[in-house]
Image 1: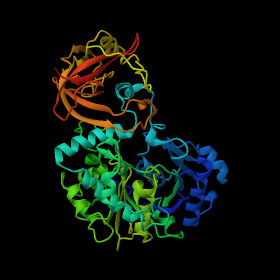
Image 2: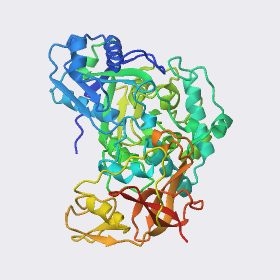
Image 3: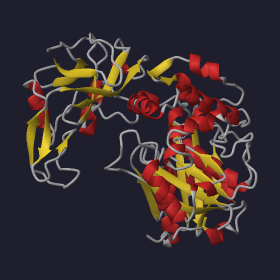
Length: 378
Length: 140
């Protein structure tokens, strides 16, 4: 497999709205505002855009977005199905289209009233009412992502010895990053390990503070060719590699798909996990930050909890800072979009918890369902 | 063992389709059966139209012991989903059946507590004329 992506395309613009519990706006408006912000950031106009891509679970249709932006002709569009976990896949598809000359400027957008409207944590988005494969889970009370993932967490605790306190250390570290980020939902709210351990069980073994936020907000990315990106306002975040994993047949129950996505991504990029300077992970639930670090190959299986407890994922002195904007746990839950935005910021040097001299920025958007490597140099 | 359904938050009922109807028909007869691929011999669960290993559609429905061990479990303490109203704490589990299959289900409410490795057995709950659910309880 040759990789024609390597640095030929880039993320040239990033944009987001405020994050809240009640936006008072439609999801369409949130998307439009985020897109406009991303275009302003890149120094482009809506008339420059010829492609739009979205999460299939996003309610704003590309034609409505195009009409409201003033796009003349939309010649490339698409969406990727699963749930929240397709952000990196969208980046890969858009980059491939640009590389193939099918599109020139592609906007990837997300706009959700995830707290005041349809709530992921309540199964509003992912519930299938006992149809299809869900007939073997939902009637038994496995109704929301937490239910299945709590069972996987317990088994992995049993197999590797990772502890709830180590999940708590993850929550505390990521909260400290949010405390440095004025855009974060929990900017002004500290969290201690005792707060985590004393918080109620939502689905045991998951405590309340193991679970991510639900957020109203929007985010957008502008992608274009490396050549064009170099002429725009901001330094390009070059797309070194992007990949996605939709199904793994021979997966062990406690493995996350990072186990196959990681080696594939690093092979595509011609890099190793040790080349990465900063990491963003889809932290819907604390344990999965640790599982992702292990299965992507950043640390050995069973070592992730100790790695976190030793402060290694902290911006403040850690060897591999993780979720430097506060992630889904403490910044906002935009289903991977805020991780992608932060991954770009780190390449540009714009993060509120900026890691020094970032050459390679890693973004996971689904604990292995997709990942992107962004670089400062093409 | 029969356990009657209770008037609480309504859990979604399975919607059988042409690929799965046989499984639910057997459950109605209080038989836990899984598909065995006639082509490659592998047992599989949940029911699906083709074998994930060899893509054959030929199956026989093997009667299972209904006995196994708790592979993992979780306890809902909060009714995050409306269907769990009045039902928490609610224990969902994955059972590793003696035949090696893993099956997602839940613990019947009057069961003794479980941990990983606890021996469990199937306990059918008749919900209505069409649907009987295979749930689990600590083995006697």
